[in-house]
Length: 86
Image: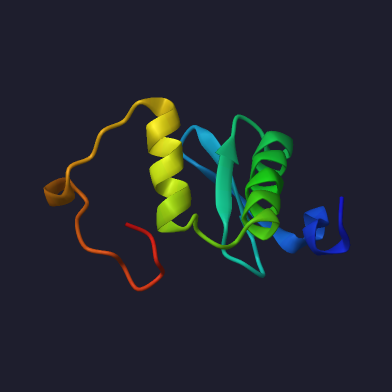
């Protein structure tokens, strides 16, 4: 576990029937059945965001859709958000 993901970098609270762990530096949160699981899930979420913070390009998205057999008409594509996510 990297230094930035030490358990002390998480705020863990119980909400109803689940535990929620929030990474204090990024605000990324996840939940689990117990505090340990909540921290593990939040740690994984933070690592995934840090691993590839850039969204796929339009060409990469098109290739993924083609590989999965997903057809999207131009009318269904919608408006691009400022972050580049469709």
